[in-house]
Amino acid sequence: MVPLKLKPAFKDYIWGGDRLRRDFDMETPFDKTAEAWVLSCHPDGENIIENGPFAGRTLADVLSDEGKAYIGSNAQAFDFFPILIKLIDAKDDLSVQVHPDDAYALQNEGQFGKTEAWYILDCDEGAEIIYGFREDLSREQFRAAIEENTLLDRVNRVRVKPGDLFFIASGTLHAICKGILLAEVQQNSNVTYRVYDYGRLQNGRPRELHVEKALDVTNLQKINCGGAPMGAPVKADGCTDTLLTRCDLFTVHRMDVEERAVIRADETSFVSLVAIDGNGVLSHGDTVLTLYKGESIFLPAGLGEAEILGRVSVLATSV
Image (cartoon, rainbow, N blue to C red; front, side, top):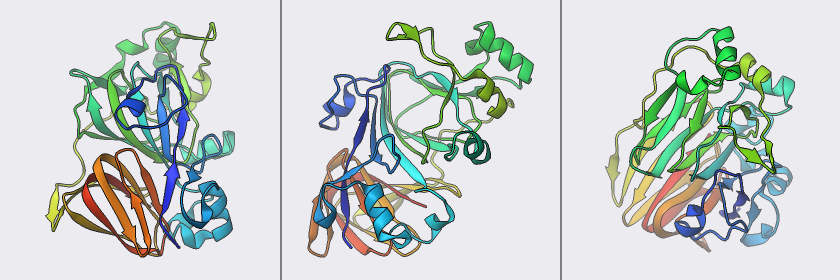
C-alpha cells in the first residue's frame, strides 16, 4: 500500500479561463479550462494514477479491485465512492443552479445528490457568489421569477474574499460568479439543475434549463450565509491546521506546512491531499512524491503515517 499521485480530469465549460494552466502549471488540453477534477472516481471524469504498481490505471478501477478497506470504514456507508474534489476557475459567471438531495437524485438520476463546500483561493476585488434568496419565496413566485426573467432580482448576492468557506447544502440555489478561483469539495455527483444562464448560447443554442426539477428540489426559504471557516488556526510544530468544514459527508482541513507535518490515514478513512500553494514532498516509506501547487495525492485508508516536508499549503479531506 502506497500513496497514489493522481492526474486530474479537465472540463472546458464556456465560463472557464486560463488560471489552472497559468497559476497551477496544469497541462490541460483546453485553451479555456473551467475545472480540474483532482479527486474523482466519477465516470464523467476519472483520475489516472501516475506512480507505483497501479500507474496508468484509474483510481476507480484500483479501488474496485482492492476492496473497501482502501477507502475506510466510514466510506463503506455509501454505495459509491463518496466525494469529488475540483479546482474551479470562473472567468465568467456560472449558471444559477441547484442540486438535489440523495433521495431525489437516486430516484431520478441514479446517483448521489450534491452537497458541497467552496473554499475561495483567490478572487477579483468585489467578486460575488449567489447563495439562496433575499427573502422567502413560494413555489409559484420562484416559477414566475424564472419565466419572467426576474430571478436575479430575487437572489442573495454575497461578496467573497480569499480564505472564505461557504457550505452549500443540497437544495440551495447558488452560483459562482466571475473572477473567482476556488476549491470545491462535494459529494460524488454530477447532477445539476440549471435555472438561469444569462441568455448565453453554446454552439448557437441556449444551454438546457431544468426548471421543473429545480422547482421540486429548491429550498425557497431565506438562508443565512456565513463565510468563515468552522475552526480557528491551530499551530503545531512546523504546521498550522485550520478546520474549514465538517459534516456527515466530509471533513476538510487546511494545513499550512512551514517545515514538516505528519498526516495519518487510519482504517476509518482515506485522506485526499491537494496542494493549493507552495511546494513540498510527501514521504511514506520508500515512496517520495512531489506535492506542488495543484497536485493531488490519495492516501489509502490504513496507510498509517506519512510526512509532508517543505513549505506548502494543502487541503486535507476525509470522510
